[in-house]
Length: 431
Ligand SMILES: *Cc1c(COP(=O)(O)O)cnc(C)c1O
Image (cartoon, rainbow, N blue to C red; front, side, top):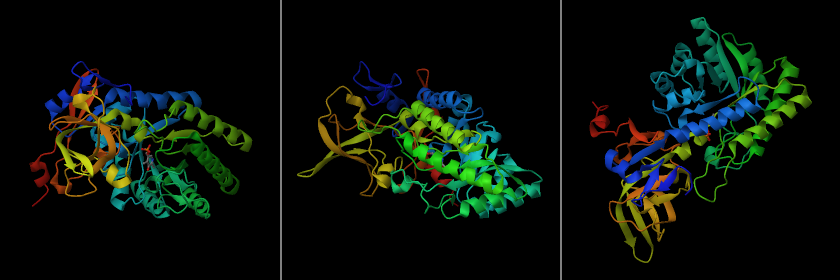
């Protein structure tokens, strides 16, 4: 099995954190998002522990809410001593509704509207990650109008290509995120921020991409950010106390993906930063990281009921499921690889090569192609692993398919955290 929280029980069914997947499907219906809370906690603890051990005081991980945002995630994140990154009033409101402290929120976004800015300041968001000069000016005006000083990090583009997918690569010079160092604009951005009333610059933010497996990309990022910070110190006399290095640690979707040792990577990044600061005579800044995928992805499994096998003679076998791109658009967007199991026959050999197809009227509605699972019968439960990140969060009502429920597993018990959407929910917006 890909993960240690998966097993096969006496009934021959897949068990997630010891709980029978077929019974979960029976009790809560399908499709169903299942999130192993204990795995989320273990992932959080890896970050918190390694960052406390290797980085200056005040360093901590911020959960990137966009990976999976619903009320139930925030008490977990909070009790594991993490902050959170949010990108919209919707994410802020969700965190606040769950009792998460506004002061531990970092507000991202490339194009925050005036209303977004006003909402964030009003709610007392701890820190804005300011993307560009337009936002800086608007935020300064808003803070002044309210008589407050807003703490900010400035989003800097370091000009790195960590060789991941173009769609999730955000650190290149030519990108809509942040302000580039290479063109000289980042220096002017900092100079402008330092003289903007209503904002207090606490440091720099940079995010280079996602699904990154090696520490070297992060070390290159540290080099560039530190060189920039030194140039800022020399030119403007400002010393940054915080480096936010963004998210992006990779996770395993299939057996052939490398295992990522997050604690070792953090240690390596910390050593690299310390050595660089020592050489440059720069005080070691506190570090923030923004893991999203690596906190929730491997804690999630999606369960579907199959409509059976549809054979196109001479071509291939399709196994149809009662969900698809509406609950998991990642294959349609990025051709992402997934590990798929027949949860009803978890100890039978994977003897059917097939394509897993969703229910939408869209030929791209697939979850995986050319994979092998135990030959299913109509009604078998199909489990797709590693769906905790960017699945629920990216779900849609295309074809008016209803959004699945989400259950959380903790201490051997399953609890409904998000109920299944109903047709009435869908129609409730329409006049
Ligand atoms: C997407 C994103 C993250 C999270 O990335 P993961 O790959 O999920 O860890 C963190 N910070 C920023 C700014 C992002 O855009």
